[in-house]
Amino acid sequence: MAKLKYSSRQQIIESSPVFDELVQRNKLDVSDKIVLLTKDNAEKIENLIKSDDDYFPFSQQLFNYYGLTRIKTNQDKALFAVAREIDRDNRTNVWRYKKNRNSFYNMINYISNPTNEFFNDLEKGTISLPDKIVEKCGSGLKSLSSKICKYLCEFSYQKDNYYINDSYIRAMLLFYLDFYEVKHDGVKSINVVNSMSYETLHKWLEKLHEARNKKHQCKITKSELDHILWYCYKSFDL
Image 1: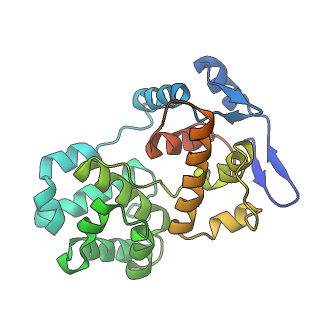
Image 2: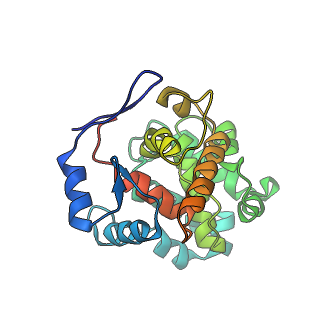
């Protein structure tokens, strides 16, 4: 597999036949191996994901089946079922690999405890919420916590408040900051990006989003930005 590498000494996106085929087959707008954050590209990637048999998300249907009232209190294990499906849909596999199941249970208890006001914070778009889950609930939740917040927010309130903390998004962030001319003094390697809190990562993704808005006329959502960085580069070896 082709490799991605970003350090203070080297910034390399190796040649990849899989990436080249994706770009050529779908006529994506690309500059120097950077898939542009255009609305046209975003729509093409969304259609590709919907038609990709490797990705068949079921969490939205489960959410609709149980409804927000039952999910908020984990009645009939509603929250547990939806959270486990989000975990499976996004291949974070916290539940599947068993190692951090205690953290998963802690997360369910934290979200469903009304004294924590999780859903109030979610609707407001409180950016520290994924970090709070990690802090309160245990190890192994760094990526999943962001996906839980993102999708529960979308399903519950139809709001685009959260980016996903994903290894490919982190791997591509600095390449995109460079391309869209966002200064990132003090953040010079993937190691620094990987050590970021969710709140800090969100800040940099917002800077990227604002920069692309200045270059491209039509707006894209946080979800569409996520999907371009993830889907276009998921064939690379990190």
